[in-house]
Length: 534
Image (cartoon, rainbow, N blue to C red):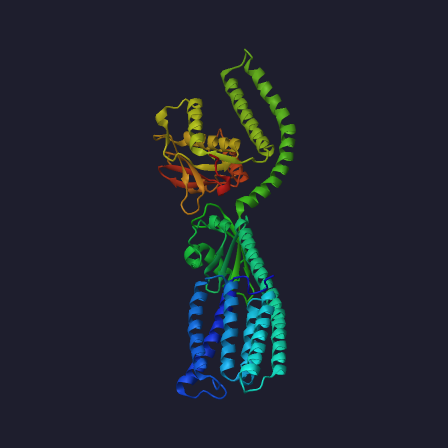
């Protein structure tokens, strides 16, 4: 069973390179001493030519080995075995040429055995020790039978063989510890990588926007929600916040330097909705300085709306009970009076006034009941191009309009929006009726839709060609019961905005000029996995 450094990782090959570097340095040292003529005793004392040839071959082989290590061919285990065997035989030849065990080359054999044991632990480590021991004993036997001096030293050879096996065992122990440490380090590295990916996924999938700044107010982290809320594209990392979102930078500067509010609501220049920003200073030792949380006010309003509708529902029920019955009696009485034969013209005009205003009050009650009893939105993906084509045909038919009275100023075939179909129908119908009421140019109504660059959010415009409206009127458009039409209830635009916010969309007066107004619906952003199925 292979232990550490036999995983064929870059660490294993690097360790093999270092071991070969040691081999190269030993051979270079011996060759240098030979060429300068300063080879100390007893190196090469018995057979100098054999010693010199062995050192030169040892150096050349170390260079060739370096080439194979770099290529990582052949496989790691085979290279380790060949390298260690080469060390054992080369050092044994040097030891023989240097007059045997007394030369001290036995310690180099110990280094070769323990190095091989660490690089490739297991049973082969015992083989390295056994081969080295047999070669040492074989040299002593050869000395005894074929040489006069030095005398064989079997005791020295035996203790050296024991040392070989002990170092092999020690190498196995060290290798096991290195294996455990390396495996633990690799596992922790994998865990940290997975944790980082998990954190990144969580941050990117958060519904709240998250922006992290460094000490220089550069954007270091910007999740998907923050990017959509601020109207930024994917290329704003490591850019100055002042350049990417100047309005947010002003809020941050006010919070840091002037003791401003910790939480502030603002409208991004490139964004579509009001955003609430919360600032938090991070730990001084961190490389990051400020953490900014961004919340879509539309979602907060949606939650507040559910509470408001609950109260409004109870109020509407009381109004319906307390007002509708007497209102019905008034309407019935006025109808009976209108049927009287003795009724004069002046009285008839008064009865018509009573009837008209009774109907208006009834419409107000019905609108309030519609708001309070509205069920939760069930948004779905809609191809607005196809849907608007059908809507325009129905609206033109209901209002008896000519084809030239309505213009569709968009050529896009597929723009997908996410909204409750019934809510979308009611909003567009209200906006279309308002446009038809105030428009006097041609076409009477202009519809446009598309996708905003950078944010990827779809939008839809309902444009009239009227004379615009005063600023004081524009500022109160979406207030309940506010109207400039004597026959209106003042709830149409209010209901339309509430319906949009119930679907995480927003309705705004995008343009107000002397040539007309443009009401724009900013739809919620659609993730890729929510796109319209093919």
